[in-house]
Amino acid sequence: MLSRVGLVASSIVAGLLALELVVRLVSAFDRNYLDELVSSRPIEPDRELTLGDLVRQNADDSIVYELRPGVQGRFLGMPVVINSLGMRDRERAPAKGPETFRVVGLGDSLMFGWGVRQEETFLALLEKELNARPPSKAKFEVWNLAVPGYNSVQEVATFAAKADSIRPDLVIVNWVGNDMDLPNFLAERPDVYSARRSFLFELMRRRWRAWRGKRVSSPTLVPVPFDESSRLPSLTAEEVPARYRPLLGTENMLQALDRLARIARQYGIRPVVLFDWNSPQADPAKAESHYSSRVAVKEWCAARGYQVVDTEERVLRYLESHGLDARALWLSSSDPHPSVLRHRLIAEELLSSLVRSGVIQSSAPSPADPPPALH
Image (spheres, helix red, strand yellow):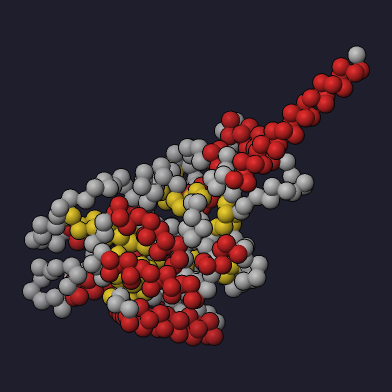
C-alpha cells in the first residue's frame, strides 16, 4: 500500500516538474509569453483604470509597450476609450480617401490628454478647427498616436512601424524635457534558471484570479523606478538592461528625431516639432538646464528641416492679458500636465503656425493673420 502511495506521489511530483519545465521553456522562447494571454483579457468597461491597465507589451524593444486596443473605462476620472487601432480616439478607418489630409501626432502623456477628455485634447481641437475652415475640399484627420510615458525613441519607432499603413500627410512630434529618459515601463524577461520561483504556480495563480474576475497585472511589464524628488527614473545607466540602453540618453533622442526627419522626407512631407511652454521650474538651476536643452533641441531640429512650433509667446501673452498665474496651465496644483486651457492654447498655436507656413492652406485674407481662437 505504501509503495503504491509513494509511486503515485512520485508520479505527481514528476508531472509537476515536467509542467514547470514546459512553462519555463515557453517563457524563454516566446516573446509574448503564455502569461500575457491572461493579462490581455478584456477589461470591464466603465471602471477606474490604472496606467498599467491601458498598456500591453510590444515585442519590439525600441517600443516596449503600446496602448491596449478595445480598453474602455475611466482614467484619472475621465472617460478613456482606446480604439481598435490602439489610439485614444473614436474608431478610425485605416483606408484614406483621395481628399483626406491625415495628420499624425507622436507624443507622450501630454499629447495623450492626461486627465482631460479626449475631445479636449489639443489634437482633437486642431482636427475640429481644421474641418471647420471653409472653403476646403479636404477632410482633415488628426490621429493621436501618443502613449503615456513614451520618449522620442519609442515615438519614432512606433511611427516607423505604422507609417506605410497610415499614409501620413503631416507628422507632429511633441518634444518634452524628459524625452531622453527611460519610459514608464520596461519588459521583464524572466530568469528561467531561477530556483526561487515557480513559473507553473505563478501561471496557475494568474489564471485562477482571472477566472474569478480579479484584476491581473501584466507579468512581463514592470514600472520603471521613479525618484519623486528629481521626477526622473531612478535607474543609473549601468543598471539599465543592455537591451534598453538604446532608449536612454540625449544622443539616442537626437538620433530618433533625425530618423523621423528622414522618414518624413521619404513620404515627401515636412515634420513638425512642437514645444509646449509650461511654468518655470522652482529650482533655478533646473530651470536654466531645461531652457538650455529646449533651445538646443529647437536649433538642432530646425537645422534638419523641421518646422518648429513653440507655444511660449502665445501662452505668456494669454496669462498676462488675463492676469493668470502659470499654474492655470496645470491640471492641478500637484500635477503639471496640461489643463484644458493649455490644450486650447497649444491647438491655437499649432493651427496658426501651420497656416502661416503654408502646410495648411488658409482661406483667410492673409496667411500671416492668426486664425480665430478655438472654442
